[in-house]
Image (cartoon, rainbow, N blue to C red; front, side, top):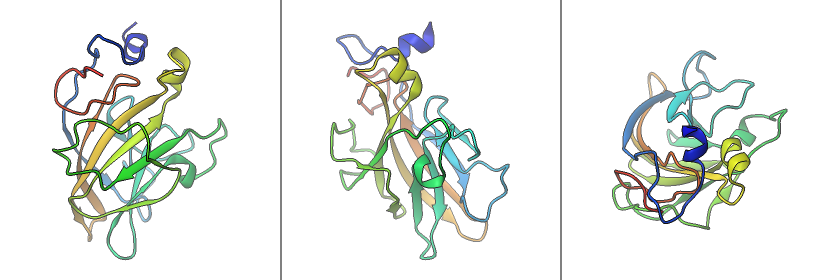
Length: 177
């Protein structure tokens, strides 16, 4: 019941999942063991590993220039169950100043290179949301890269993942829309 309620989409009632900033650590996708966390999964608000289940929304890597690379599932491999739309938008403000996810302007299914301190917003189509409320098929999140451990190929970052399908407000507390 909670999962269904969480995906009813925006209305005049506040969301049922509270937003909050979460610090996280992932390894770079290339050069890391298959057992290490290299991605974020929005529905569980957790780091996860990239594997054949494709149960992640954004994978992380470090390119040759030392910048962090964000990869949607489609660019990591071909999901036998079909790929989902994952879009990323940059250049819309600092992590703290981003208070809502935009409705449009996302670059879909492309590599996004980000610098330390640069914030992005991600719009991820989720099967749970698409099934329970086709008019609100997305979860939204904002992410900022805090630091990179080049020697250990690790990435320290923060995120706020809106846990309710279709809700775009990205501030602490229960989202209103």
